[in-house]
Image 1 (cartoon, rainbow, N blue to C red):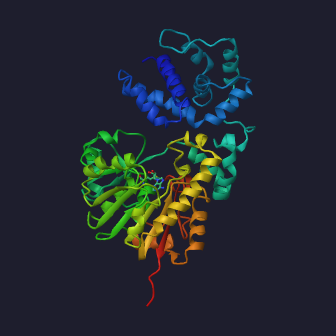
Image 2: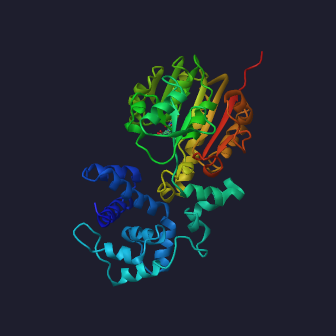
Image 3: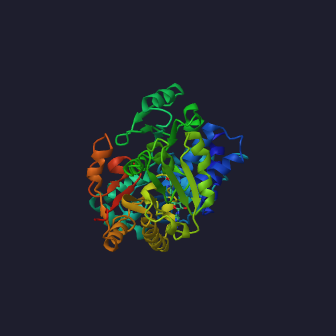
Length: 438
Ligand SMILES: C[S@@+](CC[C@H](N)C(=O)[O-])C[C@H]1O[C@@H](n2cnc3c(N)ncnc32)[C@H](O)[C@@H]1O
């Protein structure tokens, strides 16, 4: 493809991403599936343009409006090229209106906009803080409450693309073996700093096409997720419930920690999502998992199984604010009403899932959210009503369960942040049901 044709494809794809509520990576996957003639290099360039615009959305809109124009996806892509990529106006102009596959030539009004933009770069001191940090205005207060003086640093990290982490599947291999196998297929990795099972890849590589992946030696999983699963301390022979199992990311990690021994129950309200785990479980050689679709968090099944699990993991549905490096559109679609609905749902799930925990057993409440409302405040509201549960501080659990050093800033709860720890944002609390005396 010519650079102009790639630019036109980026405009088309970006229009598609903007015109839907579907996740942008799915829109991109469909776009390329329907255009198999687009090769890997072109695909990478087109995706780079779209994600570049998506990650700079607020600043691009600010500039387009400051230059007196209306925002459109096409203008956002053109603005990104001038402001973020530093392309010259002459070079950009040369590519517009130059043939069948190129973007149309700009009209007079658009040309004025391009001229205005071409004398600037993406950041400007007049941009309000929410614009500069690419965050919806309403979220600045709860984020500031959660991040304090680290607000700017963390939100800056959240604007950038995330690294790719892998978890070695200890049911099939050890870390050095997987590292060597990947290197033989041209993928260099470094051990993750905190997870003893983690390998980090610099940049995007086709991991899913490797033999090591197809043979189930590894899973793609953020280091933060790996740590949540490790802190659940799912040992061989225990009865473990993964209450919000989804497509099984943490179920797989729990099964490996259990060495396939004991009972692991994966629940979710979405049957379809649970079913998606079956291929992954098979590939990983997991065979101690039973799946159960729940009608709601109050499914009658819970009553029949109260106090019968050693470990219950609640990987709660949440804002996903800790993962907005990967899904930058998520923050623009998330509303105060969504947050308030999630807070009610999380409290209900925590309340119900807690009933499954045996005396002496543990309830692990985790989110990939940065917000205190979804994290500390949920746990503290739960503890205020349930004196039979007590916090097992992560700071001490870590030394019992993990061979690596404790990341900075850990106290009662696990709190991981993109800038501070290089992971997605994660929160976890480990709560133990007290043994009944006498
Ligand atoms: C953060 S995701 C889980 C991700 C998964 N544990 C993983 O590691 O891949 C939260 C899950 O909670 C599920 N969920 C939503 N409402 C629920 C409810 N009332 N009871 C149980 N699960 C629920 C969602 O369907 C979703 O799959």
